[in-house]
Length: 102
Image (cartoon, rainbow, N blue to C red; front, side, top):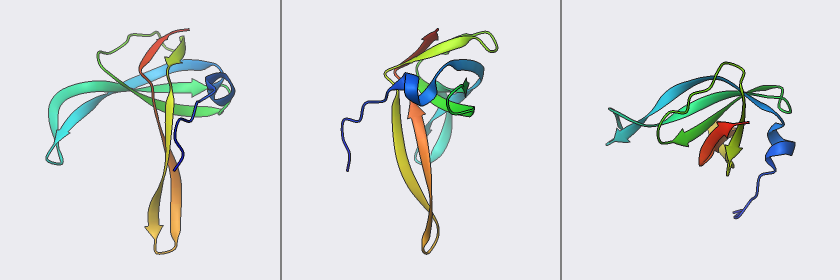
């Protein structure tokens, strides 16, 4: 297992632009509660050429549509999900300690 992977945000994401957000809810006993613990920020990435979603815990940060933003301490977890007996799909989950105006 890899450890201590450092993300080069500029090379990986390029410029990031805010395009929306949704709340992240706390789960207890596999059930969603009404407690919001953070937000998923939808960002347009100039390098990826697509939308990426970044999870940031804590209070909601406000940005204007298409406002340039930066991630603080981004982290990418890569995982595989089994679809059939001998087939898996590789996915990723991006999180950051904060998101700020760029």
